[in-house]
Amino acid sequence: MDNIVILTGAGISTESGMGTFRGAGGLWENRRVEDVATPEGFARDPEMVHRFYNMRRQKAASVRPNAAHEALARLQREHPGKVTLVTQNVDALHEAGGSDSVIHMHGRLAGALCAACDHRWEAPDEMHPGFPCPACAAPHARPDVVWFGEMPYHMEEIFDALSTCTLFAAIGTSGQVYPAAGFVQEAFRAGAHTVEINLEPSAVVSDFAETRFGPATQTVPAWVDEVLGR
Ligand code: APR
Image (cartoon, rainbow, N blue to C red; front, side, top):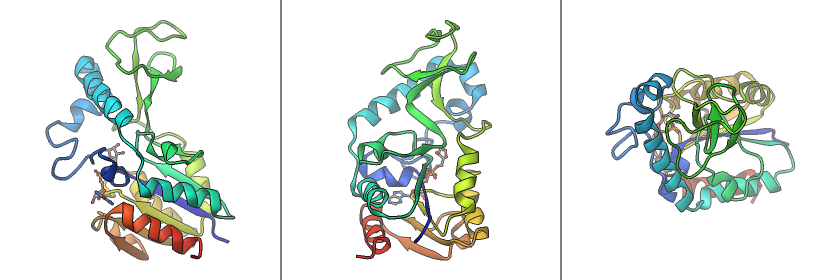
């Protein structure tokens, strides 16, 4: 019975309308990543960074999970072995699609974090500079998302799962951002079968034993059916 680890990226939410980071029309296209997704950018212009995440938070609240999110939730419910679902996405579409156990390695748009005391709470729809922390009152509230130069969350738990997995799938991720792009190698070292499921080959496609290309709403339900033996 397979011990499965799944890594998802922006591509699984594209058909829900969330938009990817890279590529034509991507979120980063008109913005410098260093301005909106680094601690330094936030220190320079917190108003602009909050505005960017307020917009994304509002967008995330208006979109619906798609057949790919729902298929992974089905896999988690019906597979008799362990299924660890790790996402780089900060939206809540896996949860909305029925997954009750999701590791958000890059944080969550719906979360707020106090940069002074590390307290976490549910973010209001709109955040602004100077918003006080409900625990320590410091005016340093920020979105609870992982920026470039920061350590992703839950890495120990993720590497533990990778070290014992027998099947690893990366879905809808361009393979350009580490450490996530290196998970396939960890899984390979553990002896797992590795599958890339993406619209097009990622930057690390050659690390995978198997590839499946196409829109996630088609490729993911078909792959889940196969894993469940249907
Ligand atoms: N179905 C499957 N894959 C798709 C689809 C689709 N409908 N649409 C796009 N893709 C693929 C693209 O081909 C691309 O390879 O999804 C991938 C999205 O890549 P990125 O935009 O780079 O997103 P991601 O890999 O999740 O980015 C990783 O980088 O910007 C940071 O922190 C941010 O978590 C993010 C991380």
